[in-house]
Length: 602
Image 1 (cartoon, helix red, strand yellow):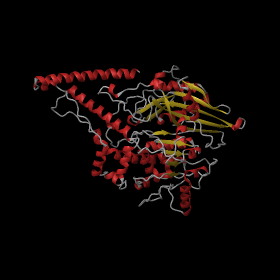
Image 2 (spheres, rainbow, N blue to C red):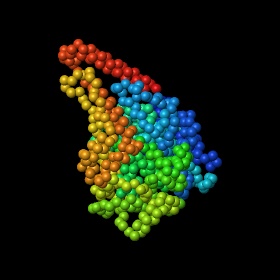
Image 3 (cartoon, rainbow, N blue to C red):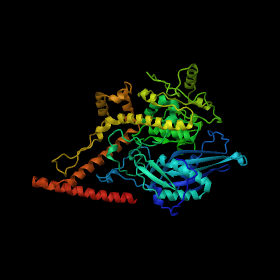
Image 4 (cartoon, rainbow, N blue to C red):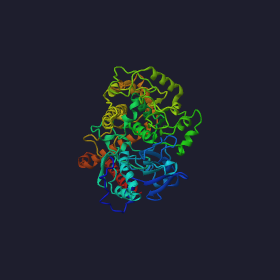
């Protein structure tokens, strides 16, 4: 959605902002200016004093394009929108909950490794404006309007920035007050639902990502539906099944279509990946697209859509000793310095196209066959012009790129992948043949990208869903059978053993869908997934949801049961046991009510 001339903030909302309602969506609105003498400075922040000094520094440094990589735009005004993700410590605001405290009827918080106590992520959505003016020092100025949130709602904050950014440069500081007032009137965000969010005379109609795709690092206990337990394909494709459903998969990776399946595997098993692009919008779109590939899997890999050398974690990564493995991360960068500083990272992806007047050299063709060749039977290149046929020049270019490695990007930008990983999943030629190349017309290209994105997202959703399907029996809930006692406890879910799972899966086979798309060593992918960073958090969370759903079903059965026929058939000892069981269930109900009250009051 773009802000048009007909946009108006009238009627003006109540100027009094409810901080609690605002914080459900937004932590802060910031105005950050690039000062030639002092660097990045937070000029204004609403609400005031809501960020720590360390957070202010990280936000300020992450809100501008890297000077090393930013092209020199000679037009009068250049606007761009991108977003970043930083780690922030807010232990005082988070009530840590031990699972032993949680009553059986309440969805427990799943403990996951990787984040320290009270650790949360802060997302910053940036509207950056560069204004060229030869009367100013260095011929121009930069300023950024930033929305900070603990929620990765890119489908909300990107269109909101398209309104808020130009509005701020039109009317100044009052824009923050106006937007904050409107946002504080929005309803409570409901994951997985279509939200109607009024803003002035406009309205943002957006689908929020589902609860099962959102991290639990804030101590929030999401009520997840039982439909998220079983890996089934959704009937409505407009409803997102994971994070960043709005990312442009086709537009970002159109030069690397053959390698999308490699990227899917790398993120599935939690491998560290460095994504480099000429501009922040391109690199953050690539990271978002990569994360969206593994939906509906909960992505527990640390991803940074726009990562700079000023991030405190860069020093830790840069000081890794030789032989030490990189943590599971997806880093989106634009600064070419990372190619040298993180030269040991095992997987490097280059995407995007530099501007025509960029200091980087553009390749003769934006297409690239990549550095991971794949043999495709029956694949037609005619319908996707970005995949070129063999030529001697392309062969020489590929040989040179392989010899020089990612450092060749220092002199010439190209779309390619550098990795020694051997993929198990084969590119689906039937999907590639359905993609439509729209040529160079911007209007037609945008509409065709929407179609292509739906095709790609549907395929990878189906691929991930089928890959996760063998775990379904471990989340299968049981309901009380007719005639059974309503006061007995439900049976436990099936116990999971990785060795037994692999042995059973090896005997059964991968299934019809995967057997056509994976090589003979398909079982290795499951072994890597079980050992990777994504499996345990996802499995534990699915189990917690399944347990919660089973308890709910048995509780409902107890409430609806006619106890009299059961009592008439019981012995005196059975009556005493049943009375004790009912008393215990009532105590658990009371504990659950008290727990909910305390949790939502904190």
